[in-house]
Image 1 (cartoon, one colour):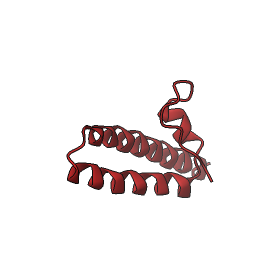
Image 2: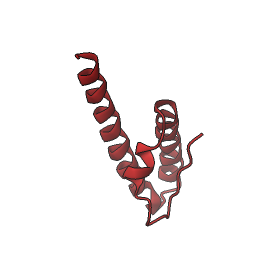
Image 3: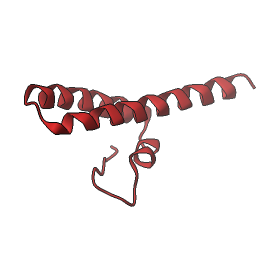
Length: 74
């Protein structure tokens, strides 16, 4: 299973996400959605970070989808 390293300056979020499998990436997205709901309920300033996670996850999923489309068309 993949592992997310939240405060690692050597491994940006984008690089960590690229190393996750599809199922792990979707699990990570689901977990960020769950944590966001909790943080919003607590009115935590950490809730802002979930939008960045979601943007990066969606970007990676779109990139993977485009790659599969191109590879399937050959």
